[in-house]
View (cartoon, rainbow, N blue to C red):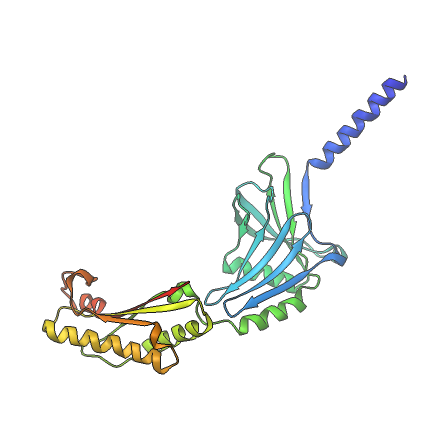
Length: 292
């Protein structure tokens, strides 16, 4: 009788333990453990929310780019596919209804969810309302189980104000946007226009902010209209116009490597020029930044 009772209790314990491991896996920060933190520089700003036992929810804004939201987890448990994004009320506002916001992509990676700008703005809006943006997706190991990850609004608004202050100091561009840059010229033009100056000003700001940039290669090219001698001279004038603009605005001249090639065939973007548009594409000065 005792052995039978022991077996029954052991079986009940096993079934109980199994039931805890199946069904919904729910991850969220409690009211008194909801943490938000901000880190940043002129290159990017990060607003991070810690989700116990899961990982992190992150808002990130890189210089020159839109803000994006992502989940970070060593193993989210989510299957690849589409997760439902909802706006759920916290327990202290249980009288409010849950609202479906749409579906988002899920990948099997350490960043299982990366939202586009529109969905990121939706998540922000719900947090400002005091709601909990929540992602639900079935697990990769069992179609009957699901993972639910909620982002807490507790302590969010104070941290977001700090995040906004960080964003206000961001550079207008990031390295990827100016690493390869081109100044185009009208026929006969040797002076920089407003569009070109704006591009160069952004490059100058970045160079001054990033000490890892050690070299700028400046190369001048022309179309094939006119004489080869005139084209070589025009490419020289334009290349050194860019060169001098950088120097006049504080870039160390020792960083600059400036060359000019005229209408050299191997450097033409359009080999057989037939239209004014073809010639416009070839008439250019390129800049290539290098960093350690």
